[in-house]
Length: 79
Image 1 (cartoon, rainbow, N blue to C red):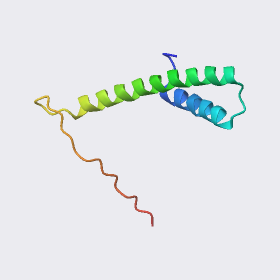
Image 2 (cartoon, helix red, strand yellow; image 1 turned 90 degrees about the horizontal axis):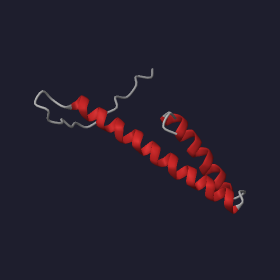
Image 3 (cartoon, rainbow, N blue to C red; image 1 turned 135 degrees about the vertical axis):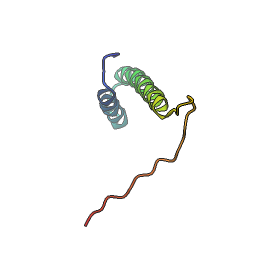
């Protein structure tokens, strides 16, 4: 699982959620799917934590202090 990309993990997790929500899996298959889903969710969380750390490193100023600023999305000019 360590070599899976975030997008692949998320896509597989969405498949598992869909299968579990359908209610068509037998109990044992549901438990295995749930276990896989938990592992994938944890793996995705690790990816997100690492991405957050990388962004924080990029936002540090010259003194090594983290600068925070609101994230604003500029509207597209659709004419």
